[in-house]
Amino acid sequence: MKTETTIQGLAASLNPARAARKIIGFVPTMGNLHEGHLNLVREARKLCDIVVVSIFVNPIQFGPNEDFDNYPRTLEQDQRLLADVGCDIVFAPTVEQMYGSKPRLTNISVSDITNDLCGLQRPGHFDGVAVVVTKLFNIVQPNYAFFGQKDYQQLAVIRQFVRDLNIPLEVIGVPITRAEDGLALSSRNGYLSAENRAAAPAIYKTLKAAEQALLSGDALPKVLEDMKSALTGAGFVVDYVEARTTELQKIEQFNEDLVLFVAAKLGATRLIDNLQVKYTAS
Ligand code: AMP
Image (cartoon, rainbow, N blue to C red; front, top):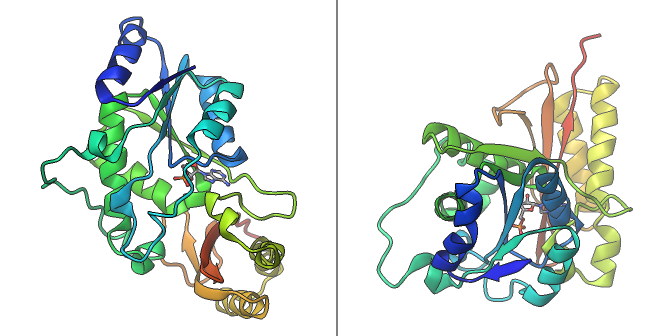
């Protein structure tokens, strides 16, 4: 496995594979890798000849009071984990390498679906994601790009601009990897105190309870209210508890497949999770 830190170096590593028409798979990450990331790499390994993983903590997707400076950076450990799952190339550029020294005047802003859920709490976040992912797509030029359903809204935003801008690759969504107690794996879980880590699985329990309630006929607004109460009772400060269609449109009642979304804080740590609930007409 190679590590490249420059765009030129990466191109030199990838050009022979491109010339040989190898299928290139790409997994963008911010590092501090866990099994969730590694499962994306395993999926890429199944479909592609060459797997590239980027590790880049992207400053422009963090708000002024967010954790950019403190975000865990664990490159050596990440390299070991990636070598074990068959990654071919790690791309770990500096901020200077990605953004240069001249001001950036171009933005990529997806409307509608970003003015909702995490987009309301994190203004500019999805623009920052869209810009960096587009830059990385242009640098890596993969055939397939792999993203986790853990960040469901992000995945929808990426699918949208890939379609809108005719970016020539296929986006693959990969299901959420969870700890045994149900907590969705996240680099931010490492911020949790022991006490908060013990409380955190309540998010998944609440999602599963809501699924059961919906399937047994409870009304959607009541189910969402019950979720909020359960999370507040478990010590969370709720950012939002919402339901949307799988395409992220508003939904008032459970009459098609929907996705339940939670964003909630335990102490200073903001956790997100979601669960798709299938509708079957009875
Ligand atoms: P991040 O490093 O947090 O930017 O995540 C990089 C990629 O890994 C994104 O596509 C995430 O959706 C995905 N990811 C992170 N955690 C998980 C998880 N628990 N299950 C599945 N995918 C995940």
